[in-house]
Length: 168
Image (cartoon, rainbow, N blue to C red; front, side, top):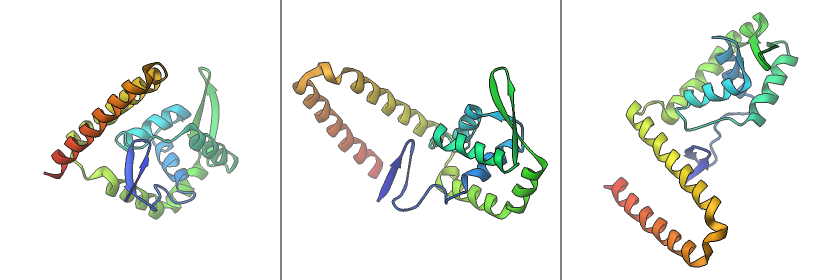
C-alpha cells in the first residue's frame, strides 16, 4: 500500500524523513551557496524532481532552529532573509556525513533511479492532476449534482483505462 504525499507516493508506514533529518538537507543546500527560504523550497523540490515539495511550515522552523544553534546565519537582502551556513554548520554537516549520504541514498531509492524523461512525464501528469483539481474546485459549487456525477464517471473510466495501460 502506498501513501500519497503532495507529489509522490511511497510505501505506507515509511517516512520520507526520519525525525530531525530535514536539517541535513537544508544545510547540504546552504553549503553550496546562501539562499532565502523559498529558494530552499524550490531547490529541494528540484532535488526531488518535483515529487516532493517541503512546506514553509517545515522549512522555516528548521531554519530558525539552525540559526539558534549557530549552524546558519541570516541577513536581510532585497527584503528577503538570506541564510548562510556557518563554519560550525559545515563542521556539523561534515560530522554527520553518514546521515546525509544515507538520506541522499534514500532519496535516490525513491525516484533517483528513474530516467530523466520519466521524471518529466510524471511531473507533467501531476501538473495535469493539479489543473484538473483546480478546475473542479473552482466550478463544482455551480456545476450541480448531475454534472458532478458525469465528471465522476469520466474520471472513474479514465482510471480504469490508465490502469490497463500501466499494467500491460
